[in-house]
Length: 497
Image (cartoon, rainbow, N blue to C red; front, side, top):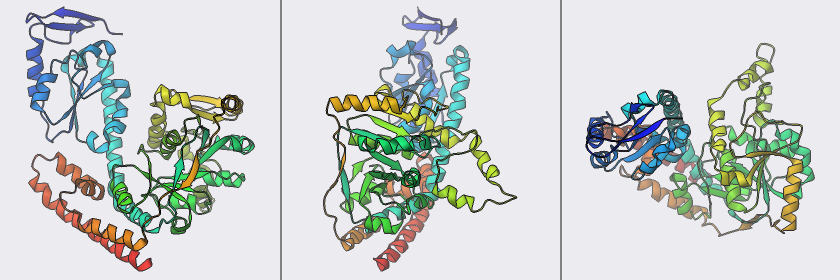
């Protein structure tokens, strides 16, 4: 806890000390704030400037004058300065700094300038050290995500085109008031299979694609199966799926299922896939990108019911035995074929006993949910299973607790389940193909959304660069290369439909 003292500076305005350390000048705090703002320099064009504990915010006015187009963020070590938060575009507590990745996105994080308010380094040494350690991880995660987008970007657009040309059974969901259960594929799912089967009529069941085979093996048919993974191996989870599907257009899915399955497209609203879905006449439901399909499924559940939401198999933690998924798991079955005397099952499972950066990101997404989320979302397991982690405001409950909640809902007649319904008729395939061709032919160097999707790393370098002319020619060359790949793909697709 900081020992804060407000004083009057010689210039007549308020100054303060924290633990007897002057956080602002005892002579002229405003002039000090101006000099600080004028000293800020960067070797790139920032889109965001984060000032780490700016105290009474005397630097803000000059920052606004010098950086009128830049988003200004105050990162707070304490809430004692809350009365001085007005005027900042965003205020974040240092313990929640990793939420900036979801708030701003990886492109903006990599165009963010983080700056210490110098006196705060002395007044809050532990908090400063903690913050910079998290900033390093934040930038690393953003870099990894950008690398993933750069590698998979063209594949995701191909998947989106394939989706738009092959999907013929467009459905939607009518909102209800009944309970929704999300089945994830963590090891704890197995402990709940008997109860899921027993109380199947009490909830609308959404299966993550990796959990589908587990449910199906237990003779449980989900109401929906959801996948948002654009990678090739995601197809393996869906090969034998017979449930209606909730998909992003970028998802990797067997063509057979695209042509025959009832499909509810998710529209993120921030990428090329949304543009293609709109132009091809699809009826979509809103979705949010958050790095984990379980998070997308949770937010989908909030959209389709006003009732409680439960999740099984949402372990989001390392397993002492290295077991990462419930069985049977499609990818695990494929990997088992490769096990032999010199490359054993135990060796393959060992990495699952170690901390995983991606798993920590998924876990942290749920930990950061607010109390309103926690009031309706519950992590469910058999009484014999104890989760090894705690997910913030989310309560862990047993099936006995579940029965109590459902009983109260029944008394209030709040059991109207979400329903999958028909929507508009899609334009014929030829019309959709022509629409996509027209879109691709009209891509130009000024189409920021396309450039960001097709060549995200090059585009980020371009937007950050102080000397843009040197980057522009590279942008043009790379963009034309990607457009040619898409046109070749469209040509092959046209021959196959």
